[in-house]
Picture (cartoon, rainbow, N blue to C red):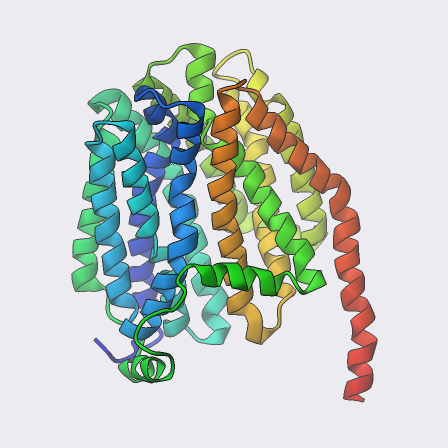
Length: 421
């Protein structure tokens, strides 16, 4: 168990299924957060807290689990994460009040260590040449999880009652944890763990505040600062309206809580399928033809236009058409921007740079729902207009910002060549 597994498809498949099953459970619950908060009479501020608490806890606690995984191994952290997530889903299912909903989501965010630790696990069991392929499995797990999860959660809430999505997610996550006990080997050699403990102690210091320091350091680089700002802004724009979908359908068309969750799940399933097709293969051909920068700007333009019309659809069936360009825009933005961020970092800085972008994403996903759910109570259209404005501003500023980033690299190239010469 302590020896490093041989690089093969077996450990990658195990970690893929571990993350996939967990994300299906997560996807079942996330579209229902706003609906359940409203069901318990939450105010605008309370809805905002409920929507953002998960990602806020994730932002501060993910570095703790990452540091611990370097000391005690990946396997214990992954098992702890799955067990904690199971408890959070149970608390969500049986929550008798708004306060319990908040506690359940906070616990879920605290235990959301599986993605960052799964990335470390993949790094342990792959060669540098196969690293990108291994990391791509996590992207596939996200796509499949968010395609299957929302409709399953919506159907369960409509047909089996409001507690059903949380219960089913808890069962899925609990079975996943049990299987991981027997199927998931340790990937991090005990010798390296011992060396890490000797060099840096037995416990992480300063906890999640390391994210804050990393962000401050990363923003000192002008080139990456532009890309990090764009990444934060697009994540904030999407998360601002993401958790208001079900509330919008309920408000516009008078659906009951369970029915609104079901209808939201169906629409998000269509969006997930389109996104999976684009990111699963088509994006590589598009990047080869147009390049990441051009695709990023196209995606921003599409997303801005969709958000401008999203809250005004006169009928529910039309949303199955409206989410098609929404999914296309997101599928062009996210991989293109991630690729640009990765290319802006040296080989020695890949881990820290991508870690900073993930920290920014967690922070944006905490602030976005807070903004969206609060403004939704003022007028349902406001979150979508905010998202539209952000996408539009990035579209107009993006070409100039990205060109500045490109010029920085171009201007530094001769200096580097002279030094080499």
